[in-house]
Length: 291
Ligand SMILES: Nc1ncnc2c1ncn2[C@@H]1O[C@H](COP(=O)(O)OP(=O)(O)O)[C@@H](O)[C@H]1O
Ligand SMILES: [Mg+2]
Image (cartoon, rainbow, N blue to C red; front, side, top):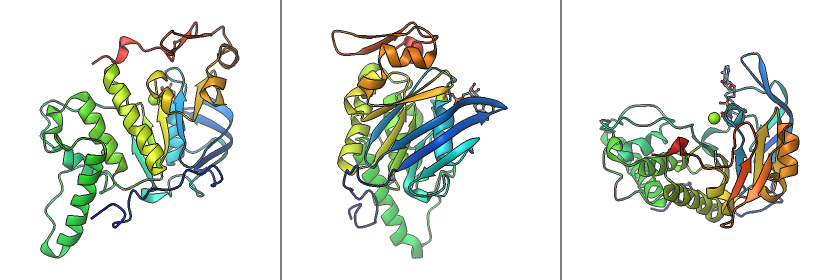
């Protein structure tokens, strides 16, 4: 059975004419009595790949949680898939900012992916009674197809603790994809991966976006691995946000204005963007995440 037959992962047209998948109008984020950012207007269109960039603590994860309905806006209006955040059911897939799995964890990759069908209820699924076997079979097929989509078939039955960081991350992306979402929210999915795995996972997400028309919002520490796939970036710093095409936002002029401090954007001979001079260089790959 294909995904189409079970109503999941149906490819959609990439169309800029569609209503925005996410829209923020005059939005402010306030947590723990502190305003992180304010006056933010931005939209994510159908099938767009958007990166959320900025230094640690700028409020990137808070933006993602607001789209999920976990953090209410302190001002303004947030709309997601034409409705209120948090009431989008299985049309939004979410990969939270990374925790690592203990090497001794026995739960298998397929079980991790299946949890995405159960609404992230933690626990090993119990065998269903015979009358549910058709549903169980359909679920098995969805899980297997999501695992195949991320290229994890060969290690999906291994204990997750025995998988490498890159393999674990692919399985977690499969979990976020298993219900066939229209919008995929990935919070630093490249964190903890080495450079070649960053490129491979970025390409995987880019392909899902382009081939299936899934809108992607990805929080990233380093923009370079995802640069070839990006439609737009949302750069959060200094309590404000700059959004637009990468070449318009990641510039000396725009980032200096946003940070309120001198920042210089350099382009290396290999095409990589390097941001220097800010409080924390946000687009430079650092050893912080080396695995
Ligand atoms: N629920 C909360 N209560 C209080 N402070 C919070 C809460 N959530 C986040 N923060 C603080 O808000 C700031 C931004 O957090 P976050 O959105 O996680 O930033 P980023 O993802 O850009 O690193 C941080 O200083 C964090 O400690
Ligand atoms: Mg974060």
